[in-house]
Structures are given as structure tokens and as C-alpha cells.
Length: 252
Image (tube, rainbow, N blue to C red; front, side):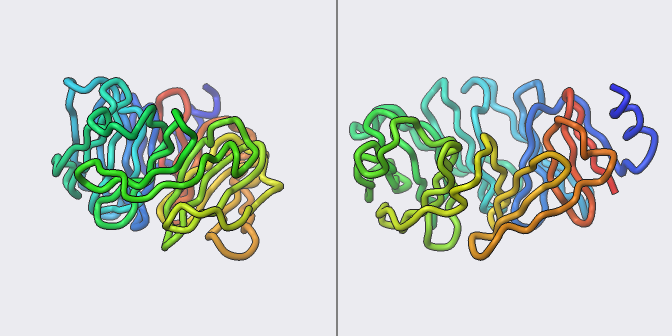
């Protein structure tokens, strides 16, 4: 609480109450989930805001904003994906229950042409779905191929590659056909990674790290006011986003 009072008093460009999670897209737009279940998109530079709210599908389980002109929402309660436009209006939906080859959808990542990669927890395969829900590509059973029985924590699609996060092992890299290629960042033992469509971001003590899918990770020394905090942080336009206790701060 003392940290929040200090942030509110100085160095804060804005703060938003009632926020449970947030993402940043490749062009620096801020997406945040509110406690009331709605999603908002704020263009920090233009200071404009759009909102999406649909109480019929239950809470939003996860979001993918790697394409700034078409975010995707996943509603786990109804096993459904929604594709939105840049103003957060619904463009199309994908009922995952209608696909007879999907057993239990888990994490997902947006691919090209409104296609979506899904990790099927039922048979431990990565599956690429076309807009109509047809599985057009899939990997081998990852339990046999990778020797890991735990489900991955996150998927990230960048360029022509798919990156699969296993906290106990690192980043498994797959081709766009679902073929395993190699491991990256095998010394990385963190539970949570963030992704802005171009780089992965994580923190470790007083440092944050960015990895742009080639070469070594770049370290960033955190501002003193954030170094000992436990909230979620993200660098944005020379400043920092910081989420703690349902308050989102934008600091310079």
C-alpha cells in the first residue's frame, strides 16, 4: 500500500482502478481486463479508449493481442474463441466444442489469416484451426516427442515459428507445420512470460528481461520504485506499466 501511495503521488501519468490483467500489443496499445468482466483498449499516445463487454459467455479466460487489428478472446466456460476488430467489435467466433478432433482446449496463439494454434490437453498435441474450426495441421503427441507430461504454460506465434513455454525446461520452438525444431532459453525457469507480438518479457528480482527470438536476452534494470514490488510490470514508450492490487499505473 505504501508503494501504491508513493506511485499515486508522483511519476504517474495515469492510473486505472479495478484492473485484473493487462496486455500490450506490438504498436504499444494497452488492453486491460476489468473486474466487471469487460475488456478495454487504450491508445496511450492518442488517449482514446474502446470497450468490449459480453456477459453471456462468462468471464474472459485469456486474450491474445499479438495482432493489434484483431485481438482474440477465449471463454473457457463456453469453450469459445471470439475474434474482434481494432475497435473491439466482434468479427467472428469459433465454437471449439463443434470440432470433433479437439478434446480439451487449453492455451492458444493467433496465427496468419485468422487461424489459431491450440494446445489440446486431451491428447497433448498442438493443433492449427482454420476460421471454420477445421484442424489443418497438428503436431505429434508432445508427451512422447518432448518427454514432458506437464502441459505447457503459454504459446507465442511470431514470424513463421511457434514458441511453447515450459516453465521447467524453457522455450520449445516449432515450425508452422507443428514440427519440433529446438529448445531456446533452457536456463529460463520462470512461471510467467509476457508477449507483445515481437518480444518475450519477464522479470527476476531487480531486473527485467526482453528476448526478441534471436540472440541473448537483454536485461533492463528496474526503476528503484519497482525493483522490490511483486506486481506485474511492462515497459511502454519509455515508461512502465505496473499492476498491483487491482490498480494499473503508467509511470514515467
